[in-house]
Amino acid sequence: MYDVIIIGAGVVGGMVARELSRFNVSVLILEKENDVARGATGANSGIVHAGFDAATGSLKAHLNVLGCKMMKDVAAELGVKYVNNGSLVIAFGPEQDEHVKVLYARGIANGVEGLKILDSKELHELEPNVAPDATSALFAPSAGIICPYSLAIAAVGSAMDNGCSLRLRSEVTGIDRNDGVYRVTLADGSVEESGFVVNCAGLYSDKVAGFAGKRDFTVHPRSGEYMLLDRECGELVSRTVFRVPTKMGKGILVSPTAHGNLILGPTSTDIEDKEDKRTTQGGLALVAKGASSSVKSLPLRSVITSFTGLRAVGSTGDFIINESEGFVNCAGIESPGLSASPAIAIYVRNLLAGAGLVLEPKADYVPGRRVYKADEKLYSHIVCRCETISEGEIVSAIHTNPGATDIDGIKKRTRSGMGRCQGGFCQPFVAEILARELGKNLLDITKSGPGSSILVGKVKEV
Image (cartoon, rainbow, N blue to C red; front, side, top):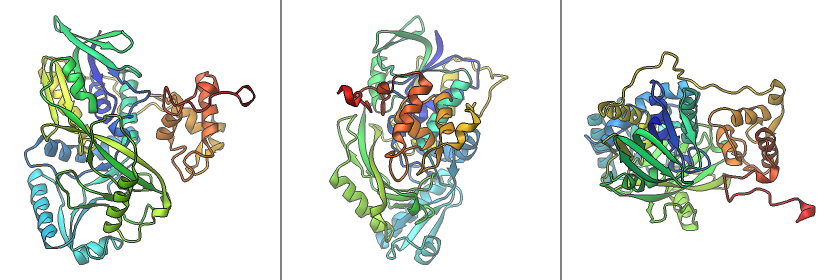
């Protein structure tokens, strides 16, 4: 029996696990996918928002501002690249200029530091490639960029290094409580028990809450399509460039990524299917049009990939984080959930403590990660030419918690396959390394778990 079961291994679940791993409590993380960070965390803008957008007094605003302030130190502890590049909300015309003033006032009320309203001249001196007809901007120097799935992987890895357990391919199908003990039933029929449960199941958090009789909310998916440009375009703008937001979100952004690419998007479309991650011709056209209206001379021929992310939109309009009988919901954690995640973890820790979880600090807690060191000679063999990733780095990713077991797992841990050719050269070599290090048949190596086989058989046998 565990003290705490966490359902969901995205960035929030990972951060909660890492926070609890500081104490002498036993923690099990359950994840229904083949790897961590495969939900909303895996297809995210990677923006660490300053905190001026959420309504003053909301949980979103409070935790966003706190999380943004924490992110630099958290990223440094976990060895995740973080860039404090700042953000701009650009306006076009008098009506939007007034909205920028509203955002400024809200940001000040929320406790965001360093906010400044720029006129057109100041804006274009700061970012020369912003559209010439932009009339003003809100500048938030505290904002940043980070790789969302790298942060989640590192958080889960740190938690595991400090004693937490992780079970993948473990979908929750039922929860009941007897004599103060939660019994969590999984799709394979097995049962795990704990005194406390933290529901970080993203798009399925309403379903999981329903299993425990703790649901007074719903969650629906909001689809967002993105384009990613080659790293040669990464310096077109230095800061994250937003448009004045609408009720559907922060609009189409143009931003450098933590790894030097340029990202455009997302669209914002409410849908019903929680697994629909298709990109569409119309959606990508909207991304191209919206981004081009914010930043001039965008080199759209340099798009190397496009993808869709699904945000978990809750029915309350705010983060849904509450506790009842030792069951904690973390639901509706849409943007700025990534930014808020370190602060959410502390908030959940305090809820659990208030519900009776005894938190005795560990004497041997290690805030960083234990990284596996491969044979030195393997680091001189370059497997991914686009991103200059060595065999040693790939082997390390397989054996460092939580270890990669498929092609996408390697891609998200090392960036092998993230470059201009999108794995066209390196994928066969990565598959061979995975098979060798995991002791598997090459035919059993997948792109992203069951149903995504890379190879179907030997040529002479097919």
